[in-house]
Image (cartoon, rainbow, N blue to C red):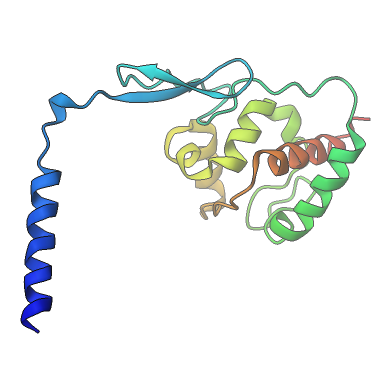
Length: 164
């Protein structure tokens, strides 16, 4: 028992000594998306400016093209069935969350991709996402979607909106 108490005290002392570092000696670095959507370091710690057209997240440009990518849309339909259909209808009718009809026409691809992959931050910062929350009254849970899953969902949304 004495050994356990001694180890606990040593651990507390070590934690206190290490956590008291001066913040002035640490250089802050944040990341900002480059044109390809990759995160790049931004010296000085200044967060990138918030853009309401793309929302909050790493996607700054998503090239969807004029034609539907059928293979991506097929994958997105499967993801929709597993993760989204319980709360979203494919019509404009609200279930728990808003219906998906017209979503790819109302929002830019970057905004959709950032919303489905960075839901919490979008609901905290984005006025359009906050307006949807006021209507639905339920926060969308983070579905832990990979970037490719989000891209597939976006393509399925476009298919649902009549893109061929």
